Amino acid sequence: MTKCNYDWKPKTFGALALSGNQYGRTTIMPELFDDHNAVAMTTFRQLFTTAGDQTLMTGSGSGNTIPEDFKIALMGFAFPNSDQHITEIKMQIGDRKFGRIDLEEIYTYDQPAIIFEEGFEVNEEESFELYGYVEGPIPTALGNYTGIWQRIVPIGAAYFKYYDKVGGNTGAAIT
Image (cartoon, rainbow, N blue to C red; front, side):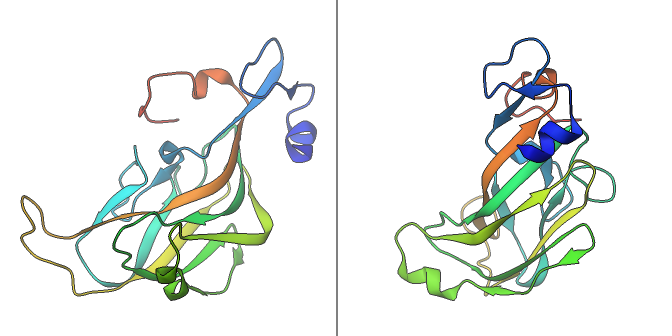
């Protein structure tokens, strides 16, 4: 919030119910990201059709950036998958690259999540990339699709400068 207060002054914090000249906070929404196929997300659930090292999600703006007028306070990632296939992740925020995180320990937990000791800021128009290793084999011909469904849910908060950017239809793209 300190960064928002500084960058967006004279706006002040208004939480979810804004009035006048205020900015707000909401959950981290999938519409701020593109999936592993560079397609705008409307949910954090993705269908993976290939195994191996790959991009998992990126910022939805050009150059994989977070859209203008949004800031993200990233505290971790949840992996609420009944069958977990993502075994390792690493991320890059702007020009900062972060080390790999092994996820295989989370197979033993009922509510798997990675919570960072210290959170990370992802500023508006700053690039964000999450990479990972998807463990195979990938099933073929499971009903009407081939592949595995996985959810990767960022934990934290998204701060928005203008209500109009988040007040539209649910699932609608954020520009």
